[in-house]
Image 1 (cartoon, rainbow, N blue to C red):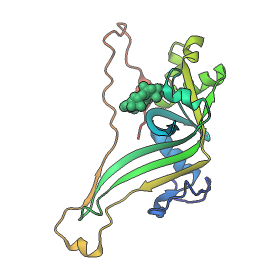
Image 2 (image 1 turned 30 degrees about the horizontal axis):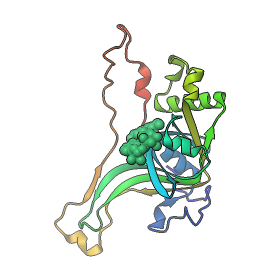
Image 3 (image 1 turned 60 degrees about the vertical axis):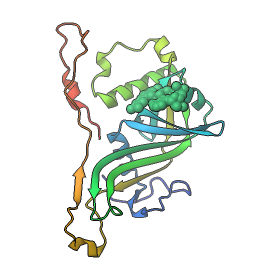
Image 4 (image 1 turned 135 degrees about the vertical axis):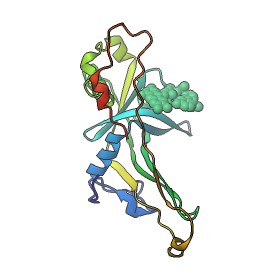
Length: 222
Ligand SMILES: Cc1cc2nc3c(=O)[nH]c(=O)nc-3n(C[C@H](O)[C@H](O)[C@H](O)COP(=O)(O)OP(=O)(O)OC[C@H]3O[C@@H](n4cnc5c(N)ncnc54)[C@H](O)[C@@H]3O)c2cc1C
């Protein structure tokens, strides 16, 4: 992950990190690396004055992030109006156990982006986006699947958000205690956390003879 802080994404009044601003990253390399490591985002939007935050799967291509769902979804129907949204991704890397409760923390990599959501209407663009999603989840799986029908494409809404007003925030490393607290007889350190992929469990209705594909070993999350 990049340690540079060049402003590929110039901070705005909204996106500039103020609290612990040394943890902020405005460079493309860091933002892309975090987005490419995650699979779950939270999208915030307001309907009739009520804020909603919806957890959903996402993927990135170039300077766009995408998410998708049923065309009947309230969230996705609302996003057709090009509303402003707040998109976040957070990856937890460890429990930071300090010598005091106050300095105990969490190691993490996170991204927050603001902008107008845009619905992808055109069938070929939608198909390409869905292929990119599947390739993000399991590289090499899309060509092995039954292609989507026009009806399935119609029933699916794909939304994109341009990465323009975006910032990453990263905490890593050991606890940072008060100088006098290092003399205490209290264990301090980091308990790493990560997403662990389990052993694939075959569908009980799997056709006999179909084996677990090799490409499942290429899934990368976190
Ligand atoms: C890890 C993860 C990945 C997901 N990936 C996708 C995806 O790729 N595409 C997709 O369409 N959906 C996904 N979902 C489901 C998504 O969170 C929404 O439930 C879905 O998009 C329907 O949204 P809606 O606004 O139409 O729901 P509605 O049913 O209209 O929402 C009505 C109310 O139901 C409640 N509600 C809705 N969703 C949730 C929820 N997830 N948890 C708790 N309460 C809820 C809220 O109170 C909400 O106000 C995912 C959820 C999780 C947790």
